[in-house]
Image (cartoon, rainbow over all chains, first blue to last red; front, top):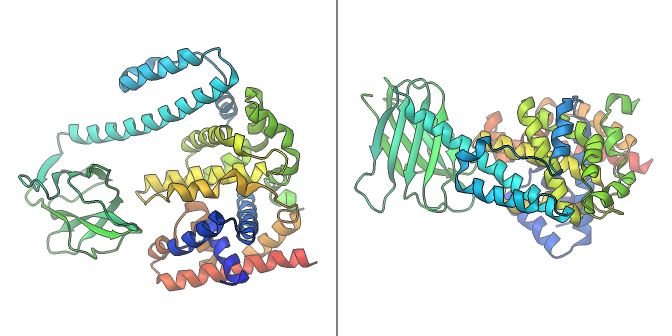
Length: 247
Length: 198
């Protein structure tokens, strides 16, 4: 690879446009301490920064400064939401109590705890979204793969006004660069893409497609193994097909 | 003139003045966080809002951005590091991480994110890498891009899309998107190089 080719890949890398093989090449150069690659990547990052500086200016609300400043200042704690987080709340309270009034190194650790809490709140919001879906009286349930220990099994929940939720287990882990894609298959028509999702380490997954669904024409919900960017139509045999006729 | 057109540029061009602020952040001075926000809050908010197009989400992600900077500043070189470009990169990554998550797109590898915002990448930024002349050249070059080329660059920078995802979004063969991306970046780079050559 000559200098110009390396520069081009570094420019792509800084913008996130590099292909996996090119990313690996850059990573390898950096790991080997290539001064040329570091310099080119630094130049590419500078160009990316200038692109960011071309962004139209927007004035943030004044409360945002207070919020950012408060992130690293010891302060009182709101207990309202802790009940929703159970055991984690107790751990957090212990952390807050322990670090309150301590030195600035402790403040650093408190910030880490708050960041974890923010992530936990995001996860909680996702579960609440799923619960609202399940609670709706319009939601209809279709199982698939029941009684099969090794193959994917689970349930599809269909709600005409809310969308489709898939809860699956026993999904195989996919190769690098691959992802699962859900499909809605209207009777007599081609499958329609219904979103990409990942599988957890234990083989389970929850995926929600929000929006109205024509339950009268919907024939099946399917899942297939696709390239990481998704496909306009299934490119492999679906690993899950859940017939949903007659809902 | 160029600073009037791009007011955020004046912020990132002052990265050479940040060494004292970085030292205070490394010493865990809480007041330094407020000063960091005063310097870079507006540019971080503007960029994040441009990506997520939701002010409430943008506020949340700005907080995550500054937390991340605070948590990682120990690895940042106060004398040779470019704080503004680093903050901007962290902000962009937080925003893109969010939109990819919301849209159900695959997340980039954690290693890739960490590498792109690792403090070592922002050391020894030279003044000639980022100056008003280069931005003027970049803005001029941006105007010379075709609509397709500009869309590819914007989808990459503001939405964090891969070339494959862009091809899917634009319903265009991947090879064509790669050509647009390569020629666009070449044009931007060439125009900025002319500034260096003058």
